[in-house]
Length: 239
Ligand code: IPE
Ligand code: IPE
Ligand code: MG
Image 1 (cartoon, helix red, strand yellow):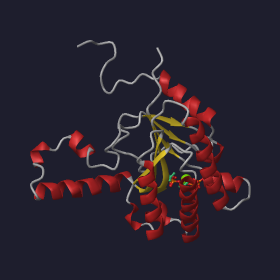
Image 2 (tube, protein in one colour):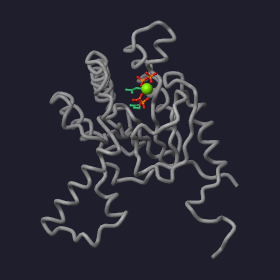
Image 3 (tube, rainbow, N blue to C red):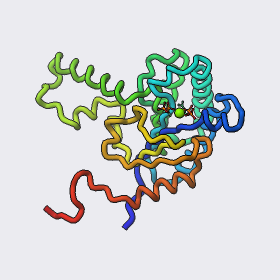
């Protein structure tokens, strides 16, 4: 029997730079094509029973890139948010972010806060945008908050469990992704959801992100549905 649709899919949207290079275009155009690919994909995902999509948009390590590329990415993000705010009346998509957005410009933070506010009343697909996100950074931030709560006697160190730890992560409000997809042929997580993907199924494709379509997503889901998930146990054993 085939497994049900994953409720939460996480995507490492990689390959914008190579997509542009192949066409002798500036990287900026590749990133724009990537943003358009996401928009098109979401329009179709919204019509399915998938509940959460988390996308890796900017990592804690992406600050190592040239200033110009970073600025282009931030401007693109601003446009994306602006567009969503404009479409607010007609869209039922809920958007929030994971990652430490406190280092982004005040302007961008304001837009993101407004976006989250208007998203509250939405009931459709949840899009979680990973922005200045790094799995290690998220874990360190969680540890700091736990340490603080131990210090102020809000929690007792003996009561720290995996569940409690998870409740200090940016993703505390929803379940871990059943499926993680990475485009562009790279076979690594690059610091994405490293705690949450402990038992996720991974799907890698050579397709560059701007070329990734809903049909590619269906193929990834189909691959996921055929897999045997054991979580360390044995499927043929009842004891
Ligand atoms: C992914 O595309 C987008 C971000 C990391 C922001 P890349 O820009 O990493 O594309 P490649 O890996 O250079 O092709
Ligand atoms: C991962 O892609 C980050 C995002 C997609 C935002 P990178 O292109 O930054 O990853 P590496 O450098 O190839 O590992
Ligand atoms: Mg890359």
